Length: 425
Image (cartoon, rainbow, N blue to C red; front, side):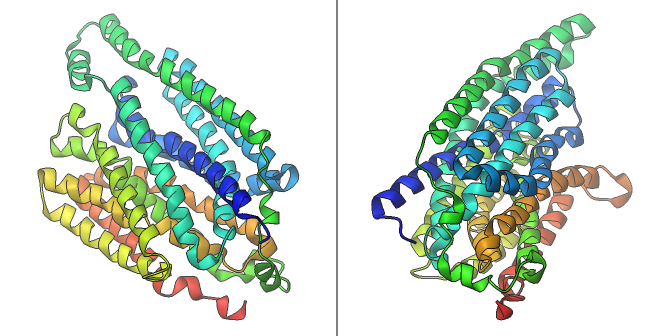
């Protein structure tokens, strides 16, 4: 790569700001789930469709996103993604006015569409801008930007949307007159107007800023060595590790959403109040933040990213079992600590999945981004699983079963999966 140090710093800074935006939008789902559950009078399983609508967009838009980036380039493609996210955020306003859950889901899908485009561009960019051996370290730096935004967003939006949540819920449940109850629900739903209008404005301004920037295209950042590796291979079907990596992303995102976005509902099921549980997502994000700091310090100087992925996956399994065996605050502590275990998974899986693709990097990245659909499918499956009386699973045992399956596959990918097919590269 021929970029100067000043150009490298500028490019990394810009991508870091974009990752801040990723986190600001993505981690608001942890607040939206209990907020929409109350304001739209939903069941637990229906509320989990917040994650479904948001993350399903990655599956449907990732491959088209790679074509958009190929046609318009990184800079304009990212600007388009930010505009789409802004439109999705604005849809929340009429959705709140009508307390329409389907319209909320439409807005969430729109936000996911824009993020799919941004993620497809930004993640491979960070992976290939420097040596592949330290890619997890760079992505961890991006992760810090992401999670700081998530923590800030949850604190601010949580304070606005879930202010006096228990008192409001008690008033709504106590209301016997339909008109009075609807007035209370409308009053609650209206809280979303100002923060999401502000979010749409921020995204629009960033779209203009990115479009006027000097950010280069991803194809300019692919190293000559990686191009040489892919000269004889023209299709992703010849790279098994990419497909296995996409499945690893599927299980990782599912596990992260389970531990992060659903921790508020999990906490309420344990008996915590709404005013207490609204902070639980931020606790998990702090765990993720600490995990990223550890990754930056350790990779690759003291431990290879594959080994750190292995250690973190085993830690995730242990914490999951511990959350099942403990109660109260200790259970929430274990769930929040899962953030630390999950932190390295995306930074390690992504570069391992796209390693050696060269000119196919953009399509390989899109395939890995499609794996984010795990966040759309696993949480509602969890809600369905513990809702089936015949299976004999409560919300704790269902959580245990799903998380262990997710971590078991990631463990296999860390040990074996990422190497399959590479001997022929």
